[in-house]
Image (cartoon, rainbow, N blue to C red; front, side, top):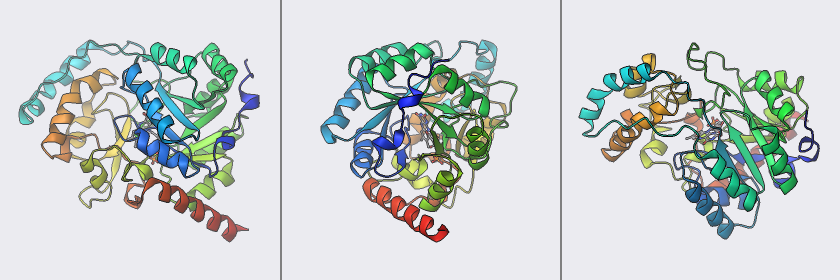
Length: 360
Ligand SMILES: Cc1cc2nc3c(=O)[nH]c(=O)nc-3n(C[C@H](O)[C@H](O)[C@H](O)COP(=O)(O)O)c2cc1C
């Protein structure tokens, strides 16, 4: 077992406040958002997922132009090419009417499934950033060790005790625990097609308690956190910092689509669900027409279903129709506040202090 990076890792060294802005692939966590959060004493994150290596690197350079403070970059782990082609074909047929409805084509699914992982690693080895986190799996020990040697802190996302143990075994610097409440994709290391989406998911406070007793790495807590009082709770339970996605998605700096931002507090959308409908991997979003109609039979085929529905989702957004967009949101979405990102960090920090004082 490698311990080279775990012993030197302390994520709070990068933070004034224990608040991390979650990486959000698809546009929300743009350089402007990441820089604003880091400037305010939190830790901003870029999401490399779905981007070309060059686009990822351009965003890294943009953040560096905007702030001298630390920030992170998040990578998607390559996915096994095990998706059932017949199941993808059946789903394609079932979505044909949606393509007609939005006057578009369904996407081709023959592309790669590795999200240019190796090329992105090569850039981050060449020109290191303060923190790199991984989702959808655990990198090889050599990768984590190399980052540790370069002075880059590493974080592996986990949704269970077994995944957190695997991260520790591989030599990760920290674990980002993602509760079932979390918005967007569950970072589960392997999506089991036999599972109902999210059926194995554990609530954040339970997950922290379980992992705290099994793993000695620093824990970052994420999922449903919208207020400083909740951050106080996860710190009391054993986390060193909190990672918030939905709370930052609605800020003016976030690059999320305006319809996505508006939907968070729109009374039209009353609840969230975990679904494979948009991407082929369980992800939590606001329940809209597309999720309701196609979620029940969407196959476990990521990223093929993502590729299949990309044009549809774009066409729906262009038509101003949130009912076929992937409205990723955590369970706390109705608590979203439209504050500038820096002000949100400060507000969360003040609420955290107040909660701690109330407890002591
Ligand atoms: C729109 C959106 C996109 C996301 N994209 C990513 C991503 O690219 N990588 C990642 O590790 N997590 C991603 N997540 C999950 C977050 O890291 C985090 O676990 C989640 O936002 C926490 O739950 P919350 O949204 O309730 O705060 C995303 C979440 C959202 C809402």
